[in-house]
Structures are given as C-alpha cells and as structure tokens.
Image (cartoon, rainbow, N blue to C red; front, side, top):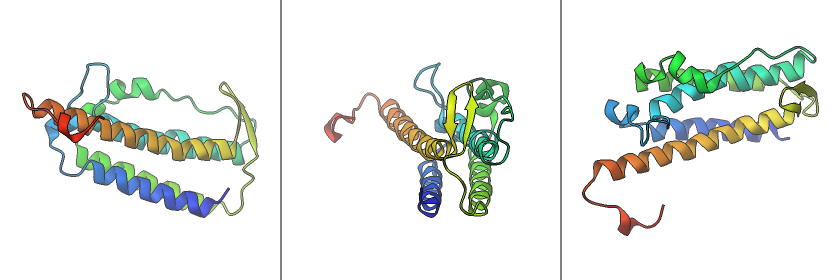
Length: 169
C-alpha cells in the first residue's frame, strides 16, 4: 500500500469534489431528480460526516484500538436527522474540505502502519488496508453521483430542449 500516492489521490479527489459544486445555485444544490434521491447539498454534507465519523475514525480503531466496538453511525438517516438540505453549499463544502485536511494530516502521521491489521465488525473481518481502499473508493462513488446530479439538473432545466445530440449518458 503506497500511502503517499493514496493521499495525493485523496487530495485531488477532494479538489474535484470542490470543483464540481462551484457555480451551483442554491436551487440546484437542493434539487433532487426524485424524492428518494439525494441532492448535491446532501451529498456534500454526507461526505463531511463520513470523513469525520466513519472512515478516519474506523481506520483509527482498526489500527490503534483493536477489539474495541466501533461507534454507531447512520449515514442514511443523518440526511434528514441532521437537516443536510437546510445548510448552505459554500459552508458545507468548506466543512468537507476542512475534514479532509484533518484526515490527510492524520494519515501523514501514521508512518508505516500495518495495513493487514484486522477488526471483526458486523460487516465481517476488515483489514486496515480495506478501510483505506474503501475510503478512496467512496470519494469516487460520490464524484460519479455529483456528475449524475449535474447532468440530471441540466436536462431538467433545459426542457423542452434536450441534450440528446451530446451523446448517451
């Protein structure tokens, strides 16, 4: 596991997330293609909470607190419970970026951790390297989601015109 390369990727992914939400109106930030989907503002707040309360914390538990039970999380319900949709996009994005900076500083201090260290969780056995890999992958899943939300909003806002000539999504 090349931690330096992963940290560079995490830095670039955070910058890309930031760039994807620049220039978005408050209306677009809160818009949802369906009632059950997430809006851009909800995705950004989810990323901040996951940064703080999931990936960094759980990786720390695997590496430094073996055998201890992980604190509970509830990302799906946090969207409503924590009123993500009522927050401002600029402040929410700044919060995510600040949490990412904390994560990168924490990761830099790890030195040479044992990526094969394990924790037995309700998800099964998870190695520290699995958790870090999932963390990096989580960004990419939400980068795709943000791009899809921008595409859907574009198509919604341009009606009755279409983007069909641009190509298949």
